[in-house]
Amino acid sequence: MANKVDAGKILELVGGKDNVSSVTHCATRLRIRIKDENKIDADAIKALSGVMGTQKNVGELQVIIGPAVDDVYQDFIKIGSFKEEKAIDENLDADTKKGFKGIVNTFFEAMTGCISPVVYAFVVLGMFKSFTAILGPSLLNWVPAESDLYILLDGIGNAITYFLPFLLAYSSSQKLGANTTVSIVLAAILMSPAITGVVAAGNPFKVFGIFPMTLIDYSSSFLPIILIVAVQAYVEKFLNKVIPNVLKTVLVPTLTVLVMTVLGLCVLGPIGQWLGNGLATLVMALSEHAGWLEGALVCALYVFMVAFGLGGPVFLATFAVYMQTGVDYLYFPYMAIYGMALVGIDLAYIIKSKKTEEKETGMVALTSQLLGSVSEPTIYGVLFRNKTCLIIEVIACAIAGFYCGLTHAGVVGLTFGLPVVGSFICFSGLTTANMVNGCISVALGFILAAVGTFIFYKGETE
Image (cartoon, rainbow, N blue to C red; front, side, top):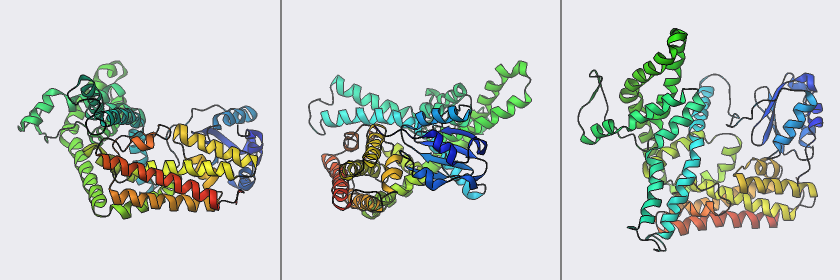
């Protein structure tokens, strides 16, 4: 058990109660809104037992603690008599400055915020797809493809991808502030038998007899419904302003569906589908023609993408490909390699560290990575405090990523959340060679990281 962080000492080192506007926390960080940043003693905070690092972000000091952050937060608000606020679920570490860069960061933060909750559904999909791949004809052949069990397992996985617009309608409405029920209704319109029948028949169709509709199959799509819900939120806000309270219950949802049906089927849906297709084409071309180079670079730099919040655009492009093809070669394989490389480093770090405090930091980092796929404790508690460990992680991931890209191993199921085994079975579902090469890549990342850390890390924080 790691030493408990001294919340009172943190409050003292940020300038005391009078220098704090408010405080909240996310999964690993205590987030303190500061009035005067000159009063912060960041070096002293970093030196506190249990603190893995700090980061400043637009008037906010983030103290990186790890999974124990909620306990520290409760102590902090009690000592300072601060108002308790809801924990932050999404990543708010992106640049919030105005201008083009700020707009781009806000866009990708919103997109990933809409998609991230749905990843749990893909964990389920990955598990059932893995069952069918391992037990079915493609590997062990214990369960025939025509058997009821195989059909059921395969059907569960396919249902998740087919009805993805419903899942995204819910998560997007929660993220963007739209009426959730109306958002699900809009997804139902896209997927209704009447619309899908028109698309399948290829017959020209006009919405309300006026507006020409582009014939697109929206099953397994993700960008169209997100764009629709984003605009829906603004339409609802406008209608709530202009419609009298006595009529809002009836008119706001009805008029929203009326307007968004036209915009969704004729404008936003096609735009989202075209953007998704464009991203998919670009990513697949890169993966096909330079897989080994892309693998080495992405995997080696993955730790910095996570640390500095640069993964949004890549994740978005990757998700577009994954939804179209059911497999990804660009990004998800290197998530698996990166995660197991961190496990290797954490294990060796715990063994080699000479101080009890550093061993405890390693235990927190290892537990966070294994049980929650949360890598920040390892990044800030181990890698960024020890350049040797950081260099080893980059080299191990580069070599493993090179092999993965060279053999063109792709991820089928998003099972990364499962401790250890999830990083291996995510490659099941294509061919035996794909699974073997994927497993070799992940094992290579783990072994190189663990052995490298054990040999070159001297046992004391640098």
